[in-house]
Image 1: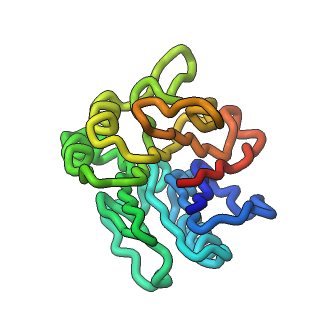
Image 2: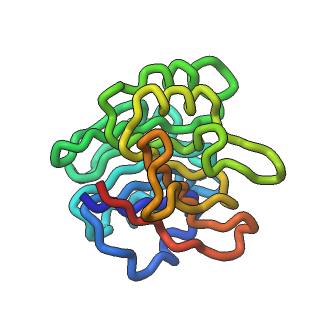
Image 3: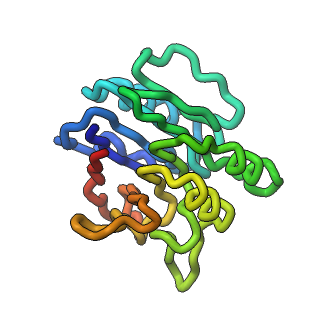
Length: 203
């Protein structure tokens, strides 16, 4: 299975042209900039029209307009994962969004604790602590998420949030850390000036 990983497009999704072929496209949050409903609707219209067999997205901290929302009318092959999962061709995807209302309470910790142990592809907005999370001399990743990822050992952990750390770890040909491949798919660069190339992964 080939997975196209996007994240942190911040309203610039329509600037993405000639995207690579893949079986599944996953957007790991922050498709909005200011978090307006108009931004979210424009993203959803674009995302649903992408020519991929399966499409998955979660929300990031810039997508608060969808907090608690019930999104109706999505095509059967488009999945919004909100502390939930979907199985595609035998591969189990599970998504944990990043809403600030959860992060400032204990709800996000509870969401992380509920990640199933049989997850193959974990989709979060935040990185795990110490993995593609470093910017401004700070590791912004989540320590509890790191512990959970090491515990359940998904085949892939894909996320975004830290624009300066776009990339895949390990690089091709290097043994995966903890047996896991990590992908920071942030499309917008750290200065919000240019777009990074999307990550493509295979499992």
